[in-house]
Structure formats: C-alpha cells, structure tokens
Amino acid sequence: MLVFRKVIYILICMLILSASVVSAEESIEIQGEYDIETGKIWGIPGYKVVFQSSDPNIAEVFKAKNGEIRIRFNSPGDVYVKAIFFRVDKTTEEEWYLFHVTGEATGETAINRNTFAEEILKLVNEERAKEHLKPLKLADDLCQWANIRAKECVELFSHTRPNGEDGLDIISAKKYRIRGENLSVGSTTPEQVMYQWMHSPSHRDNIMFPDYTELGVGYYYDEDFMHSRRHYWVQLFGRS
Image (cartoon, rainbow, N blue to C red; front, side, top):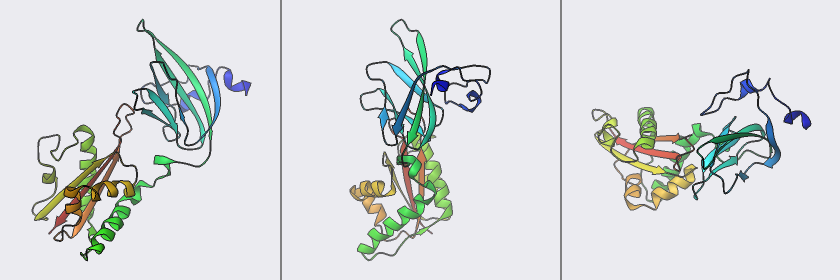
C-alpha cells in the first residue's frame, strides 16, 4: 500500500471535484488510506472542515444535524476525499484521503429513480382502491411538469413558483380543467413520501379526490451538500 502514499500523477485527471478542478500536472500526497464499508459515515469532529469527493456516487458529502460536514459511503469502489481545514487565522490547509469501500450499494445509489413514478402510481392506486375509487393513470405531460416543479422547490419550497406564479399554473388549463399539487421534501423512497402524504389531511385529500383521473410524479435530488433538504417530490393531479 505504500505506493498510494507516494506522489500520484496519472490518476489526477480522473478527479473531477465539485468545487475544485485538479489538473494533470498537479500532484497530491495521500495523508490517510482506509478500508471502510458502505453505509458508514466518516468525518473529522471538532474541526472546521469541508470535504470534496472524487466520486459522489461512492462518497456522498452531506451536512450533519450538528452543522459539521460528513461523508456517507454509498457504493463500493475506491474514492479520493479532499479535506479543506479552515484555521482561526483564516488560512486553509488541504489533506487528501483514499478510501477503499466494500459492501453492497445503499441509499441513493441503490435506487432506480426511473421507476419512482410507477412506484408512486402503484401506491396511490392501492390507497384509492381501499375507498373504491377509480385508479389514476400516469400522464407524460404531468410528469414533465412535476419534474420541473421538483427542481424549482430547491429554490423555493412552496406552492408558489420562484417566478411568483401559482404552482398549478405550470399545468395547461386548456387540457386539465381540474388540477392539484402535492409537495414533499426529505423522504428518500416512494414508500416514505407516500406515508408522509397519506398522514397529512390536505395531501391525502388530493390523493383520494375522486374526480382526478391522471397523475404526474416529479423527483429531484439536490447534490449541493450545504443543503440539508436533498430529496424533493411533487405530485400533479389532473382531469381533462
């Protein structure tokens, strides 16, 4: 393993970091090398430090509840982590670490987001069936608009759009004469977000409204590790 502690040139071009780009001419020296399993969380408590990951799919940077920055290991593989320490004299110091991650993929990397709409549709129709309501159908245009709204919610989590318009204005009033919207943030799976919606009277009312015939589902994952809210969900309901 000593080779990893030597100056590394050839692999630098593979490190594309969110806030810092390292050129192939630069070199890094590894201060620490670790074996770690997926699902583990790593950090340096007590220091004012931020991290940058060479592969966010393997090592996800996030902000813990106490305000400190942490690394969550979601997928197996080798990953470099850059630590930037902020000192009292306002100077910074950088250190590099190499992690060998083993185990099964967990969390965000284990989820196929392309199936979210179908999964939520299934859960919605299961709830509607309990009250003998007609099932909803997925509508491509509602899904497209819902994905736009999910991304907008990162900027403004509200039924008002960032441009000041009502959230429902994104739905074509010419096509859908009855419209509705559900929003949620924080849940990581369709099951979790449906639980939230079904335990909120106003959101449940939308899901169980008998006049709706079509559904659109939107999801957006915010990769900015400085945001504590990262998973944004939208349901758009309509009837022609």
